[in-house]
Image 1 (cartoon, rainbow, N blue to C red):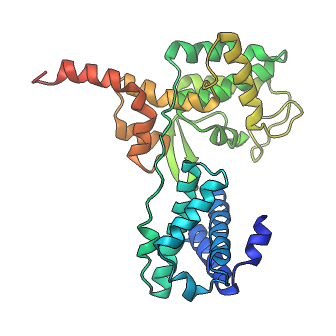
Image 2 (cartoon, rainbow, N blue to C red; image 1 turned 45 degrees about the vertical axis):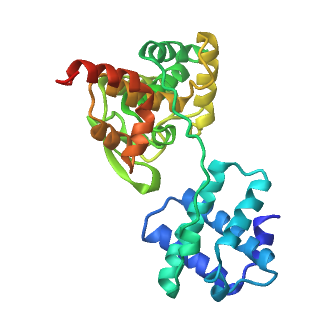
Length: 312
């Protein structure tokens, strides 16, 4: 069933409430458009199911009476459709956010929905590269193209990921007007959250080398990083460079552009970086997310503990 056909099953009142909720998330909470779109799809799917499940259109009154059995039926149907535990947890989170907002507006008790337990799933720990592997990737990445300026471009992007902890989307969103790079960058990340990121000399030098060699004009309001034909550089191009380089170096498939960002966090921790400071540099809203980035370093933390704790 398409989202359009699902939407047709929803009552006008429920559809209007959903649109108001999404507008609230966008305007008041500053949710990113991707988040708003995902919320809309997940909640539309939920509301359509409840219409089919009950056999009647679900107005706001009916939605306020959804009980635990209804929630279990929805989760069971969703899982039977091949949706994994992680994706179901995301969908449930969207439904809960909607119900919390709707209950506050309409004045009903949303306990049945809000108390629904999220399915358990195993969080995959990130696999950062060790420092030597990261350096090797930076050395071999520019050799993936027979155009010297492209090699310099790829080196500059990867240096920003590893040296500054940028997401690939953040690096590729830099404008030409930001070069030469300053001592610090103001980066707008997920959810429109801003953070200040120090720029290491290696990253500035790599960007300068690329800009000097780039054969295209780089107007200040245009993208800094360009594709072969001069258009904006797409993430796929950097992913392909990483894939070729890791094959040549015998590295695992987990050696992706995002692994360079993971490596930034872990290597800072190895050097004695403070977890809270690393959280700020990465732009994480929650410290637990930063801890997941560095969870692979538990062995080192225990070694430090054993040497430094007075009772050890």
